[in-house]
Length: 293
Length: 301
Image (cartoon, rainbow over all chains, first blue to last red; front, side, top):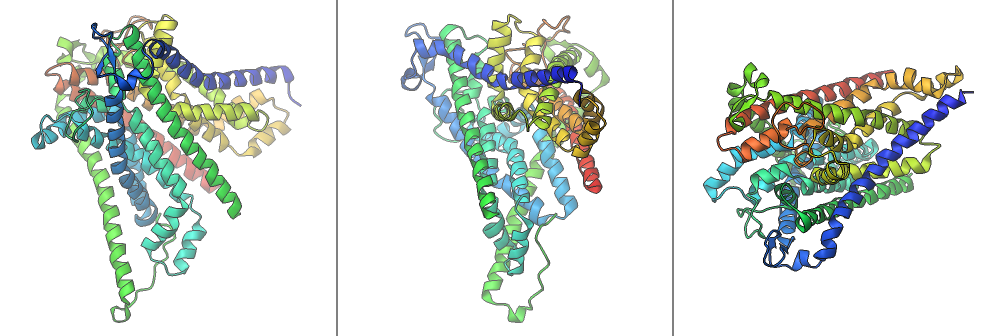
């Protein structure tokens, strides 16, 4: 039916290429873990939480490696950004699906698409020259957790909006028409029918947005001030896990370099954990749909 | 389109129940809140683009694009940086395009026969898509720069970016391939054409818009990237003479000018504007290709 030898070669190549793509994940995780191993062995995982501070280069006490300030900065920034961007993104999705005429919805989608295309370094630059001076007027010094939260929120709105809209669009038309036939108001349809039906998709949207916020580096590096401290207020300068890697990788040696790879492992674990959570939603949805028939 | 919204008949104010009045009030409030949120998002977008245009445009000139940076970039242009950016991009696409297209072919065409491999590949690509770019930077530094001995070079940077854009490239290509009607495949099989020829002569041409969208999005992601390049392609702002030279990308140039060079702000504005225009152009291209293509498909079926 087909010329075996040539197609066999093709099949081999496709399998090889796909395997290489899959292996890249192993390679990335493997190399980051391998480099982190040295620090985990020499310093031990406990000291990353128990040391007095983060001074990896100090000679006197073989360096101090407390990651907690950076971890808390990452978590606060992500939480703040998600609290802002979640409602904004979902509102944008509701607008496109339920309120806007077709052409306005299309325009809004375009703007969301373009917003997602702005590179993080440009967001960071804008934050640095526009947002930070504005915050400085209110509460010096300016570069702060707040600036980071605002920039991150703007950056993850497109992620949330795009996924939220596709999950709202997947709600069966029959549900909405049925609700409408029952005389339920538009608000009722949105909050009692559409949002519950799209629940897992909306949650996925927010979680993937959080994943993006955790991993964001450049923008947050440029607006947060990069002081290693657990933030006492939103106006305090902070340094996130990602910014810590970007700042110190250039000159780090030995255990210090390895400690930065430990930071990378922490980031990797957080993000992979979030992806795994959303994957479990996805299977949940298919089960729900199959039982509904 | 506003879905599920058949216009409800107006109820005259005389007969309106308190409950309905409450519902009207609630409806109006929610509409206002949604409108405000959308206005905020659009407003921020216009603010960013407007600010960059207002300050950046006066800084732009032909000379800015063709001259070398002088005095750490405070004056002069960005020519060597554009060359490095293109070189990094070329390495990235040269590796990721063949690899990604082949993987997408496997995912879409052999999903029935290679069930386990397809599942593993898909899972790992999903996770890979979520890996933060700075972690790719760490990996690229450890693997390409140190383990493979490529040092800080355009090659290291481009290869790191290739790993990063693969998930995007594969997803778009696979979608393009899946939208090719199975009739095409059956017809090709019935004519006794080999699978290899079917792929080259039938599937890839038919899926071309999907390939282009994937390519454009991949280019967009690669050009926008900064964090993965800091410790892989390096900082050197000269025109690279080989792929083993260090080269500074445009995004990294913006970062360096705004954070490390006092008085570099005007040129940072101009560079940011160049990068933004490049990316917004690419993204709108991808969006309009996929829109036009999707509507055409809907008409056909």
